[in-house]
Image 1: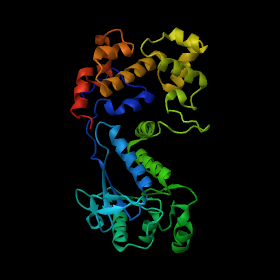
Image 2: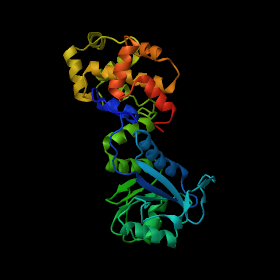
Image 3: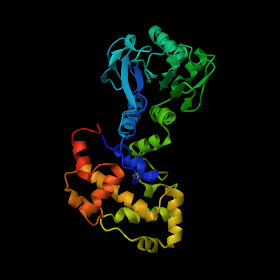
Image 4: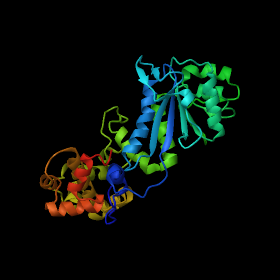
Length: 352
């Protein structure tokens, strides 16, 4: 794995983009073990949204943050709401809550056509998980199973609107929320696919902080719809939270990677004083313009290096470096290895 070089650190925007490729930190705690209980006719979209958040969390770190397993109620093959059979890793009776392999998080996956009656074994497992202070989650109407187990008594939960009437009638000690997502100290519930993603991002943020979630969002929300309903890539230059003059400067930088503009040229093209430009970068991106420009170019170089077979010399030219030697030194300062070493590590699966 990469050996750390502390000469250069990315500013927060580009640190998220490059986080999976930065030098590995010292080993921390073991990965969080997350188990999904798949009820027959579970929502495939809600399930995959939740799993995608966890898988992407692993991808943006050099060491895995989560392990993921799935459990069918009484069979290892579970039919989803799309009439597609999914092979679970285990059956519910094998769901571990004690010992070295005990789950840290148990998420019940519901769906529009899921049976809302109580499943005895599932209730017993959920009650045991609650006693062991595991984190519990419910997707779509997965909160119904949590309510049957008594784990939601006195709490507020999110559930699909189609099931509100049933839940209010059946569970008098549970408050049914009008919100799509509810989170308590040990229980999180969501009402559909979009909120399933947000629920898992909230869990990840609690465990691993906002930087990790920001990196995940950058990957999963790359084609989000803007308020105008126009599909725009989620690049910094399209971020409406940034001032328009700064976005204009970022577009100029992105459009001039191979032949970088000078700082004075950038300021002139954007109609700003150099001092005003520097304040914008420091305030919103926590970097000087020249530093951010370098980070942008080294990030582009990293992508070309790991996603293509283009020669290192050509990548250096394409990203505005005066020589391969200069590029190699800059790359190693940021990523802890030379470009050739990074390419070799990628090919041998060091980041897998």
